[in-house]
Length: 237
Image 1 (tube, rainbow, N blue to C red):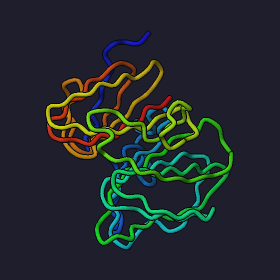
Image 2: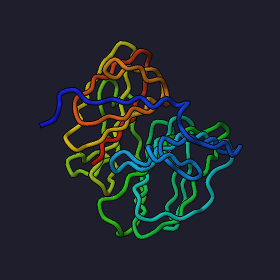
Image 3: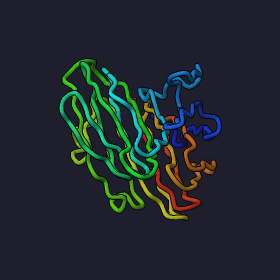
């Protein structure tokens, strides 16, 4: 059994770690790189949630990863991906790419646009280590998630329209117009972490502004949009 009311903790954007490298202005919801907070190491199997602004004609040069599910949600602009498997692709605002690092992959992510790209980079620990690396991208029109949850990436077979990830987690998105409400139930022994990409919301009466983090434990939450809002949520074990 789970409590009907979830526990909700708002983590203001101003409280996040981060660093401005000029070409990259990064904000970290969890300990990452030179930012370390023992109370913000992870949330369930969610290990990284970075809020990045990448300047035009710059980006991340080739670098390696292994044994991590890396989901990139593009907020504005676009990102162009290249990797050691020969994959190349451009992912635009509102769309998602997934890289399962598996036994190892090298990749580069460049903003080849004439405007800054803003994105969420989300890392989730895989259920099993190893396996062949892979990459994929998919468009997700925002109209398809107006007033409702849409599963963007998932490790569950029933989510056939989502990008696959190798972990017992889901990445979901929703858009709400001001005054609209939406509920979400977090299962027993599950963890949810939500960020409004844009807008202002209330979560069980607690206000969360754009780019604030919302950490949620088991139970049901009600989200009400104070302003038109775009929401991303990760539900993991």
